[in-house]
Image (cartoon, rainbow, N blue to C red; front, top):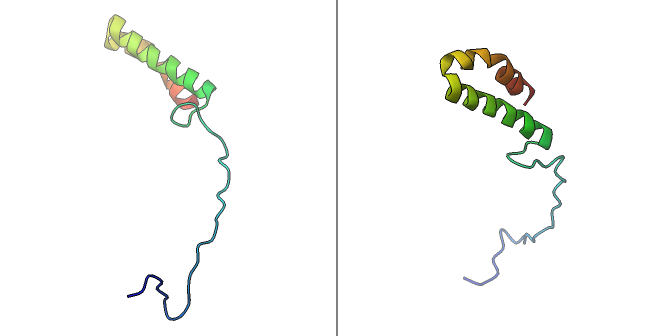
Amino acid sequence: MSSQQSTRGVEFGLRAVQFSRLTRRGILLGLSLPQLIVLATGVLSIVGALYAGGGILLAWTAPVWLLCAALA
């Protein structure tokens, strides 16, 4: 076998390709800064409620973290 192989007499060369630009880049996991702030607020309210009062405070803070989850 030779070092230059052709398929049925036609040689295929490499062509340069150009990829499109990314539409937006996120800070962490593709999320923007406002989305990360909202997500952090929701997570901190859940963790704080669980630490401070357990299930009953989790139920009281549900509107906060549900709103944060919907916004993020």
